[in-house]
Amino acid sequence: MNHEQLTTEWLEIGTIVSPQGLRGELRVYPNSDFPERFLEPGIRWLQHPQTGEIEEIELLGGRYISGKNLYVIAIEGVENREQAEELRDYKILVDKSDRPSLEEDEYHVSDLINLEVYHQQTGKNIGVVIDVFTAGNDLLEVKLHQQPVVETKPVRDLSQISRKSKRKKQKTPKNKPVTIFIPFVKEIVTVVDISNQRIEITPPEGLLEIN
Image (cartoon, rainbow, N blue to C red):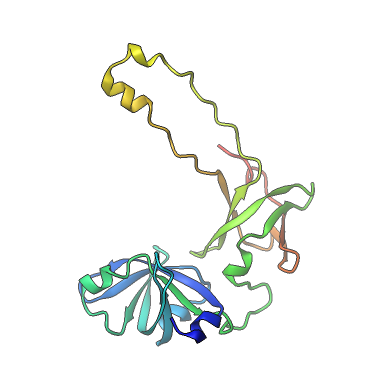
C-alpha cells in the first residue's frame, strides 16, 4: 500500500461473494444505491478481507442479476474461475471524495449506518441502523435497543441421559441480536437528520412487533 492510499478515505460499495461461471466473472453483493459503480468501466480498489491491504483494479463492466440483488462484474486480469475464487470476500472500494451527487431525499448508504432510530410520536429510542438492503424498496435493518427476553428451559440431569444426548444438550446456541426491517419510504421514515445522527419514524401498526 503506498502513501497516497494510506491518506485516502475509502467508501465500501460492495463485497465479492462468489465466482460467476468459468470465465473469471464475479458476483458482488452491493452496498451502494448507485448501479453505475458496478456497470461503468474504470478504476476501483479491492481490500483483502484479512489483511486490509488495498490494491487498484480495473473494472471492465458489469450487469445486474434481477431478483437477487447481485451484480456480476468483470475485472481485468481475472480470466478463470480459480482466479475469481481467490477474490471471494474481498471488499470493493472507491475514493470517498468521488461520490455521485445526490437528489433531494437521497442518501449514501454509509451515512445511514449507525443512525439512531426514534419513534416520532413517543420519542422512544427504538434502535440503531446496522444495514441497508437496496433491492426494490430500500429496507433499513435496525438492531433493537430493548432485546426480547428469551425463555430458557430447565437444565436436565445430564447423568440420566446417554452420552450422545449429553453432547447435544451441552451445545450452546449462538445469540444473535433481534433486528427489524423498516421500509425506507417518506411515509414511515419522516425525518433523516445526518448531522445529528438520528432518524424519526411513524411506524404503521404491527411494524415494531416481534413474533
